[in-house]
Image (cartoon, rainbow, N blue to C red; front, side, top):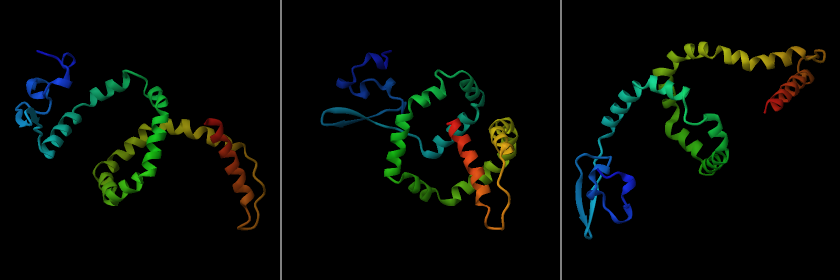
Length: 177
């Protein structure tokens, strides 16, 4: 059998190598200006979605194994791609993709997601994330517990107290950046 790496695709039609065509086991050949072309045979969306749900739903162990044994560092790869991320975000902003996506989905989509899966996953997720919460909140509590606030004033005149908290938390945030 010929592998894809052995074929010069600039001078070949896929009909000559049907085993390299991944979309169909029953390739249809068409004639167009003397060239053999292969029509893509593809299943209907529901069949594809059912297969995806069945296979992906059974892949929990593979998923966990992949997370524990990545080919490359996820965070390192993400850091290396930060310029691509920034460019993609800028392009999405320029095209107003964020608002368009929200308008397309509407409120019904996220509400249906919460009703179908989010609500039942919320409590276990909180429990599983407790140690991360402690790690994240500890420096905040430490900063707040060392603050000495100005004395209380009459109602509506306590912005000095608020500003002291804002300044301390902003300083903490910038130190962690």
